[in-house]
Amino acid sequence: MKVLMTADTVGGVWTYAMELAGALEPHGVEVVLATMGMPLSPGQRTQARARANVRVVEGRYRLEWMADPWLDVRRAGAWLLELEARERPDVVHLNGYAHGALRWRAPVCVVAHSCVLSWWRAVKGTNAPPEWDAYRTAVRRGLDGADLVIAPTRAMLAALAACHGVVPRARVIPNARDASRFAAAAAKRPLVLAAGRLWDEAKNVSALDRVAPELPWPVYIAGDARGPDGVERTFGAARALGRLDEAALANWMGAAEIFVLPARYEPFGLGALEAALAGCALVLGDIPSLREVWGDAALFVPPGDDGALAGALRALIADDARRERLARAARERAGRYAPAAMAREYLAAYAELRERRPGPAEAACAS
Image 1 (cartoon, one colour):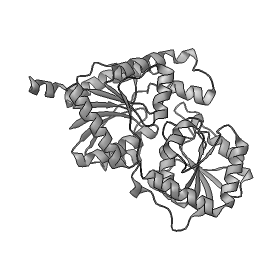
Image 2 (tube, one colour):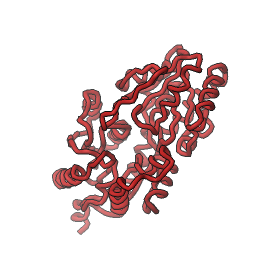
Image 3 (cartoon, rainbow, N blue to C red):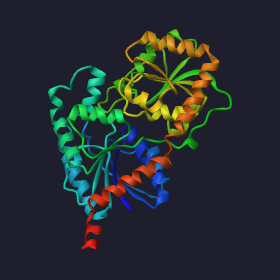
Image 4 (cartoon, helix red, strand yellow):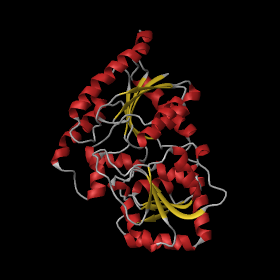
């Protein structure tokens, strides 16, 4: 089977795409990965080369959630249709919305990793302003054009429906990470770690920075502080590690006792999953998606309450037994989100798509 998959290179979608592609390799799936957004970093190129079943085709188009992207979105659509005509994939797997509305020959799934409108409601507490109306229209058309919509959590699917209306033909497939890439150090260190897109207000890392002076352990934050708009966030008490490659971040997670993600908005949370696999106790924002993923295997705090965050961290730092118990529970829970399981569910989704709407090659055989 051949899959034409899109991926942006800016956030967690790249990690998701690499993980899924690797898990699909034993099943004989070839992935043509069409990338957009920023150019691939050296680390991303290395990751892609390590996947024998992946062939990357780079595009330098702005993404639909960026400022004034629509000329690039149209150009990217034409480019993607040319790729489909050349590659003749069995399935088109879009990790964005707008291009779901294109006239694809193969069956199409759209994966809902995030959404500006639901982000705005969760982070700003209001509906997105009128300048996002074009985005709203493009997302709705993309959802309507897809043969199947997939989300990593029920919470994300519900948020999508709340902002864009009923989403027909939908299912939930959780994200995953390879446990072999993350392990606890032989001796954990007394430190608190956060990681992710530090420029993204949704991650709420600034809350951890604000409470850091109240904690007996040092706080470290890893990730890119400069957003796609060129604006760089700064931090005070927390010690910034900058953007780390996967191996370096895994080492920090393996060393850390506690991982904090006080998110206001997080459709799944790959960073928390990685930290759990590395033996961290999790302190997370109390939002529906993180509750869904982690159940009672994490400590939850209201994302807008700095006092609650500081108090929860101080209590956890002082209680070795509870911290170890939470770390064990998180690692056990993380076992649910294995790449092999994710691959099986995507293969079932692809089979459903091909049965519902055969691609051109299959249609020719049937006739």
